[in-house]
Structures are given as C-alpha cells and as structure tokens.
Image (cartoon, rainbow, N blue to C red):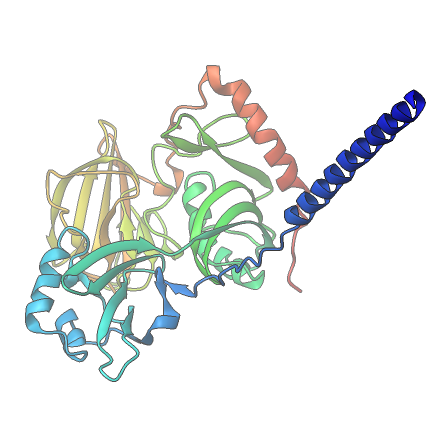
Amino acid sequence: MHIIKKLSLALSTVFIIAFFFSCNNSSKKENTEEEIVVIDTIIPEPENLLYGINVDSFAIENNKVRRNEFLASILLKYDIAYKQIGELADKSKDVFDVRKIKVGNPYFVFLEPDTTLKAKYFVYEIDKINYVKYEFGDSITVSKGQKEVRSVQKEATGLITSSLWNAMAENNTSPVLSLHLSDIFAWTVDFFGIEKGDYFKVLYTEDYVDSTSVGISSVEAALFHHRGEDYYAFNFEEDSLTTNYFDEKGKSLKKAFLKAPLKFSRISSRFSNSRLHPVLKIRRPHHGIDYAAPKGTHVYSIGDGRIIARGYQAKGGGNYLKIKHNSVYTTVYMHLNGFAKGMNKGVQVKQGQLIGYVGATGLATGPHLDFRVYKNGKPIDPLKVKAPPVEPVEKEDMDRFKEFYKPLKQEIDALPLNTVE
C-alpha cells in the first residue's frame, strides 16, 4: 500500500511537470504567432512640385512678359482686382520691386481646376535662378525663392587658331569661359596679341538649373600657353573672405593695371610719333592705342584711381574721361559714345569698373577707343607699361598654398589638349 502511494505520487508529479511544459510551449507558440504581424505601409508618391507648389492640384498657364506689359496688365487678365494688385505691389516692396519686371522674363499662373479657374498663385522669374511667388487667398502673401542649382566640375582644353572665343566654341565649351580667362590673365596675357599655337587648359565649375546652364561660378585652376610660355593661375583662399589667383610661385596674377581697358577687340592703330591721321590726312603724333570695337562695347578703368576730367572735344577726342591712378600714372579714354552712370569729375573708380562705352564721337572714322597712358605727365606706349604686382601669398601661408596648388597643377598638366581639325 505504501509503495502504491509512492508510485501514485510520482505519477502525479510527472503529469504536473508535463502539463507545465505543455502549457509553457503552448504559450510560447501563441506568443510567436502574435508577434508575426504583417503591416501594409503605404508610401505616398512624391508630389510633383514647381516653385514649391503641387502642380497636380492646378491648371497652369505660363508665358513671357511682353513689351509694354506690366504686372497690373498681366493680373487683370486673370480677374485679379485692382485693389488686390495694389496690395500685392505694396507687400512686395521689401521682397521685389514689381516695377523691375523685364520684357522676356517668364511667369506662371496657377489656376484652381474648377469652372471658375480662379488664380491662386502668380510666379515671376527674376532670372534663371531666382523667382518671386505671390499667393492669393484671404490675404496676399509674397515670398522669394531659388531653383535648385546643381554644380558640375568640368575641364576644358583647346588650341587657339583664331581667337580665344572661337576656340571655346570649337571645343564645345561655353564661350563665356573666355571672359573668365581674360579677367584672370588680364595682365600676364596679351589677349590682343593671341598667336596661332597658343592654348589653354582649365578646371572650372558650371552651374545648372535642371539641364540648363546658368553660368560659370568659379575657375579653380587654369593654364594659358602664350607665345611659348606657360602661365598658371590657382584660385587660392587666403582667408575665409578673400580668394585670389596666384601662379605656381605664389605671385599674384592681379597687377596694378589691367592689360587693356576693353575685351575682345583688335588694335587698329598703335602708338606713334608720326601717324597719318585717318580724317585730317596729315601726319602728326598719335600717343595712344586705338582699339576697334562695336559701338557700345564696355570700357573699364585699368586701375584704381580718381576721375580728374570729363568732357567733350568736338575737333579731337569727342567724349573723354581722364583718370589719375597715383602720383605717376594717368590714363585717358577717348571717342566714347557715352559715360557709365555716376562717372563725374572727382569720383573714385576701381580697377575693372565700367566707366563708358565705345563710340565714334569727335574726329573718328568709326567706333573705337583711343586709349592713352601718361607717366609723370609724358605719354608712353600703353603696350609697354609694366606696373608692379600686388602682394604675393603671405609667407605663413606658403606651405598651405603648396599643398593646395600642386595636385591641381598635376591634374591640369595631365589634361590632353583638344585640337580641332
């Protein structure tokens, strides 16, 4: 009997343990089943945005500003009341002056897609990047925005057979790059004396909005081979606010004077003590350089200075400006079609500042600039002026400069030269 009791107790214990494990496994199974949960996640499709507006919600009309068309005349076509237009112009004052809307610039009108086609937004493109947006609701809101700009690192090379501008075009490079190079090498390269066999290599950054180029934002490094010599330029950041171009020795490419006061022209007459005057048909000194260029071509000051004379010579130089740069040098710009805004006697000007426009005033057979340089009051050949350079890279920055320019020089030297057959 005692043995039977012990056996019964043991069996009961086994059943309890088995039941416990059975329940525990069942619980684990249930928990496992509960943890396997499938959730359908709906990822919304990205909105189709234009100027930050969902275009799928509107009917859109786009056009360009026409001649004699103003903001009011445009908005009146979309039943915007005069009162709202006045409110819009008033609120826009601190954002964009509506009087500066230009002929040819695009604009977009976003219309409610119902039978009323009520205008909800008006967007005007200030330029290829910037725009101003007006929202019509209970009140008018005005905001300024920018399109997304994509910067692309590029390289270009080319052999010059006629002109730098043509070489750019022949090598499928934006000719605007030639203007950047002419600014960078304004002193070291004589762009009026480009020779066959000269070539260039450039590393630069071009900006795009969508697939449209909006300009060249920077030139990182360049090589210009001119008359058998190599001229390098590296855009080095001297501090957080200042960048300048230096050659491989750390000397600045920016000199006291620009090489010439205008861009991409030709020399029609040189410095001479006895030249046959094209109008008077007599021989007399011509103490300047004549740059033939289309009427209206921009003329720049070759250096910092102060305007000491502005006037008109009916039987001579026509409209002219005279700029004193320092105690040694003075320059004169003659036969101008007109003067740039604010160019009056006593005004201080900066190197490269627009001062006037090429014309044919005075005694002239055609549009050109008669440019003269005086050293200590005596006329000298402008093509032979040698002014001292500006400051080189600071000594304490030379190690940093070397680390900066050497890989750029290796990269630009390795670029294969494109030639056009």
